[in-house]
Length: 211
Ligand SMILES: C[S@@+](CC[C@H](N)C(=O)[O-])C[C@H]1O[C@@H](n2cnc3c(N)ncnc32)[C@H](O)[C@@H]1O
Image (cartoon, rainbow, N blue to C red; front, side, top):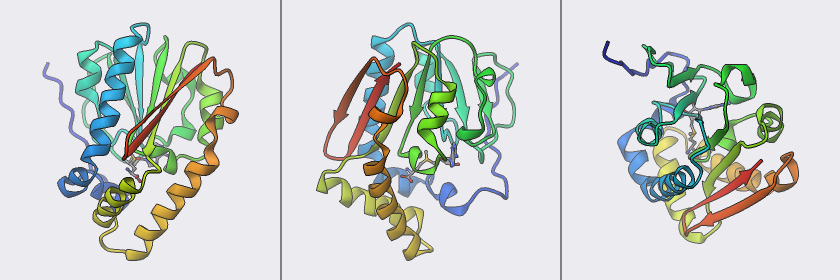
């Protein structure tokens, strides 16, 4: 049977989440996403032991084809973008916030948890949830905007598209993201880190934790 992957847009999706996947917003974020994608490729190439790629805030199944290229199981987690048909044991969709997930909903084997595209900002208690779910051998990728001034230019264009109906939310989102990134300190808050790496360019930065 042909696999059908059609995100159902439900009425509960907040408008700014829908706007994030529109072409103008994705165009504004394209340099960010290109760097992030290259890091994911690098990690999957270097870590063949990874069995599952868990994409948090997966929206319309972000990076599904990339994950399939590497023959990994894909687990998309997002409270707002349910997938219509799922008939493949290598693709899972969990219609929840990340903070509500239980480990038994994710296939067994080492996981790469991908917090793509600054999704950390929206997750409640992200470090505590990772500590609850993760197992030795798992990896975590946290991808967010770089602190470089050039990132501010791209962030502003992106959030203008996302919050185009509300100037207030757009300014607020940028301030909150900057503050939350300063407060996160995953290196101190994640349990069992055996090694961490940092990849950064002028727009995007990715922290990788090996657990
Ligand atoms: C990938 S993030 C993109 C964030 C955006 N680039 C920014 O900088 O604000 C957006 C996705 O996260 C999802 N999302 C929102 N809250 C979530 C949560 N608690 N757990 C998992 N995904 C969530 C949304 O539905 C949306 O598809």
